[in-house]
Length: 142
Image (tube, rainbow, N blue to C red; front, side):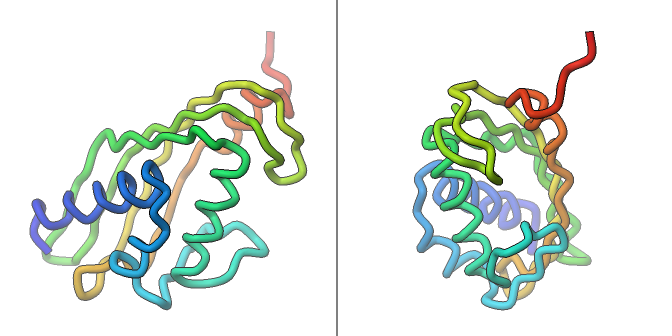
């Protein structure tokens, strides 16, 4: 996969899947047996896990928005790395944390391995600690 194809795949994944809340796009962009190395416990494996993760975050942050900040591809290894920023307002339960009404902004870096033009495996470093601080679950030092 060349860099233009990789960028198009990532942009569709976030623009159509997350921002437009079109879960059907995952059927086209993600392999059925996708391996998520940082999967949220209790979610189904594979592509269905992406759909469940999207639904879980969208119920907690109905206005969630993801902006892809950078994309880097390694076409020799079919690897795509992306750095993104997400914003939203906490309006529903998330991991047992009731709605706070707080607006949050988090960042993440994710590396995907592709197979046949689709996302097949992923590793994410998302700022969950920062999210919990913004929600008031973890105190912010003075």
